[in-house]
Length: 237
Image 1: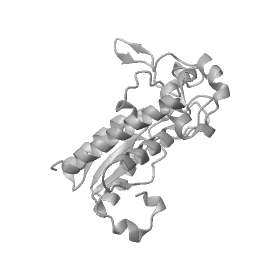
Image 2: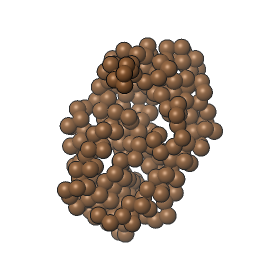
Image 3: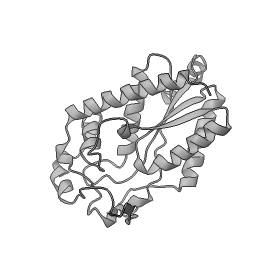
Image 4: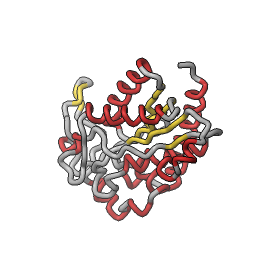
């Protein structure tokens, strides 16, 4: 059940303690991809995973702004501090738990949120009446070429939201892209901002994307999410 599409009466009638909370970011993904890429992909995986799960689960509205100051040089990027992000996600999870949905899987679509979500979910699970765990969808599938606005994210969007992808700009995006994320030396990423190593904010070659691969990625991510929901449902807290 998607909360934003349901009535309070129907939500109250649900017999489940499971919820998924999509979390993403509003940030640049090169000249060819929507600023909402990380939100759209998290929402798609959350919805598909809930559908694949053999049981009732609440799907909460997505949190669209995350920890993304590294993309601040590119127009349209929005960001909040890690403290603000953690507090917003925490209070959202606690409000879900207040209705009895106290086993929460946070479906994340943005790499910059990973550390904050891990810390927050651990703190909530140790100290409160809720169990929460973060699931970053691209870590749950076979995606060694993840990049940023690269073939993985673009494949998924070509499958789920093709009208938002500017395929005519793929060649230009690839021309100004970095081959890999960051500027590493002796294991240290010396670059704090994307603009330091990528001319147009892209990492990887979106020309390698396809809707067919996107369908496979969504199937794999939703299957992983459904299995996680089952594990969380049976887990002793």
